[in-house]
Image 1: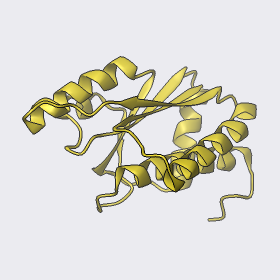
Image 2 (image 1 turned 45 degrees about the vertical axis):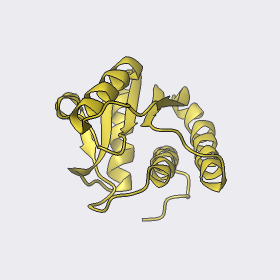
Image 3 (image 1 turned 180 degrees about the vertical axis):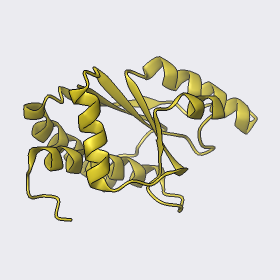
Image 4 (image 1 turned 180 degrees about the horizontal axis):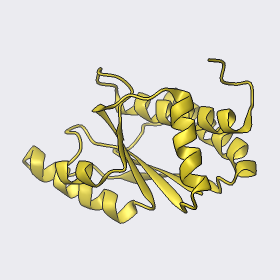
Length: 158
């Protein structure tokens, strides 16, 4: 299964980008033997529309063009889930024959309601608002953690 992280907005060079890349690389290496073929990051440009709803709609259209397979949105109003449950969800999609899953990090205005309605899951890392760069790191770390859980690697200790 192919994993895709689609993120609205660019990540600046620096230690955060290096850490994100480190987790992406770890997840990719640990996931390949399990059948996770790739872990790609697609950057969606922030909309320049004047109104927030128009910006969200334009970004949603770009996300739809980039999307592949299952759709998982990261949003503070989403459902919370433990790492083991997340791992088993991703694993069940792969084992169920899904070709791909797209994990989306929205822009500063959040995500369009129509996109939320299309999602297979809207997931939250907690009720707090997190900076975009940290959310990218958290998402990639959780993907790495998920593949280590699925492989029985001792990285995750409940």
